[in-house]
Length: 256
Image (cartoon, rainbow, N blue to C red; front, side, top):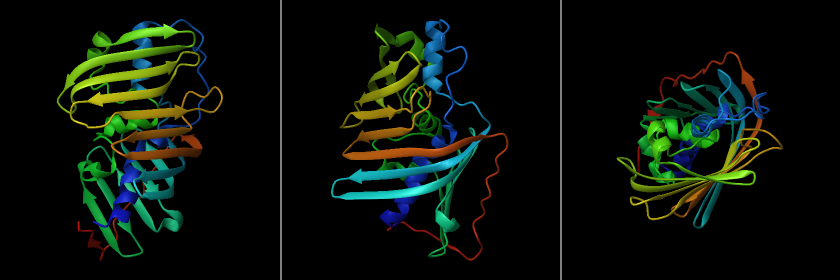
């Protein structure tokens, strides 16, 4: 598959949960005391307050000797699917927990396959749930919430808290995991993963607009790659549809 086409598909996958990041104000319970378990659970899963979202995402992928950028419109149904569209509908990408599907009107090609086909673009291999957590500000690498509650160490300092955990994972092997969160309002500002299966530290950085709980920019770096995501014009939707159908007569996009 041509690298530029993989880039479009891969960015769409990485962008999937950004559709869930409507700029929501802190909840009315923000100032109330929160138990340690409730705090961890909120940080682990991130914010997700609507059935669906619509908006736009600008993504920049920086690798040694290359830099590529794409802007996509996005529709999302929470935990079910995301639809990314290039300008004028010239290309569309549908992402679900099970697979990725893509078509390009310019060369009349399409692609259908598992998310694992896109691992070469990412600093670390993610599954659907982890990508969602990445993009709406949750603990990406907390594979098992109960397990991380048992092993997580919390060190508060003024308006921040540092969380750290070590665990063994089938996906990552032996892992050292650190999270830095702002406490008021509660939101993650940094995550770091050190895994025996990856040669480089994987780092996620978030920035926010004023007191918003959800990120406005996300930076993912590791393995010599950096992915920058900028979210704009996101609105929560009560009902969202994902119109996608591969046109007849298109040919499969093959790896090269």
